[in-house]
Length: 362
Ligand code: SAH
Image (cartoon, rainbow, N blue to C red; front, side):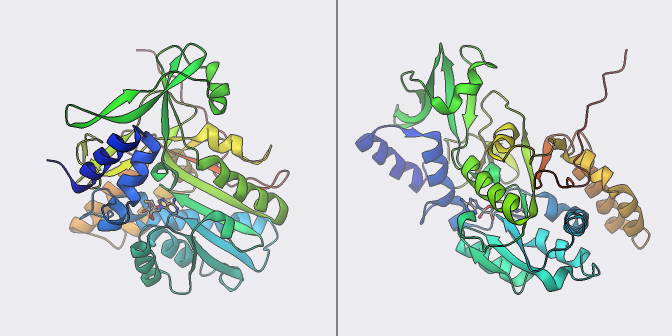
């Protein structure tokens, strides 16, 4: 099957040459007529994937309570900006706000601002979070102390892929061959942005680079360092990983990213080392697995409290949701959290460094 977007991209490649993986991702996700986010509601049980805030209210509630703790540790600045990047359906912020209702002064001081590219999703967010306002980029956020959360935002930003070739890199591109879209390698060239990766890779290794990520983090870090606040990033990914992590999902199942452009969600693992490096010195926390942070925040006690008023299938799905968010075989280990707080101030609670258990002897 050839999608309308695949035909458009093949024409464009025939006229102007191969696309970077980043250009390909951008077209697949945001093409004004055929893009994935433009044409369908991607989230929830009926969508192509389900995210942590949609799995259980506990996720957003615990983020909200820990965020309120950071705000109190910073002497409750008022007013302040409460921002979310890529809020999807608005569920996370709705849970943050419900959980912080009884924190004295928090709601009165908070101005909720969403950074969202998709007009269709803005409408959905407005229904769940009345009183929110919107900007298109982090550079447009209002001045003031800035508290930011972002779940599965960075994984949707386009990445470029490079294969190590001596001291240079061959960019992996999308070309046309045998009448279809195929991956190909551009001739090797030096890539200054990948200078630090020469030390930890070998010939033939693939590394990924997200050009939009560092400027976004630096913009947030600058405002937080100067005016106070904090940021919490949650995503699937790793620390300076290697390998091709481009992934397309349709109807909850992986598909070939080149096979049906525009009809599948496309994401890539997030490089948390690049996020941390883009913060000012002494601002970034450790990278800690989601399951570890949620346990530190007391998710199991919270789950038990909620379970007391449940029975039957509701109780079963509640137990499954707890497992899905925290278990190492589910989202607990693949998803990571990283926070930023002003240099010299208290860190985000729960984001203290973590060391994996050494494997036990057989
Ligand atoms: N945080 C939500 C949704 C994650 S999907 C959840 O956890 O359920 C990614 C979100 O980022 C969507 O809301 C998408 O529209 C938004 N997004 C993607 N690229 C963006 C960009 N460049 N600028 C602003 N928002 C973007």
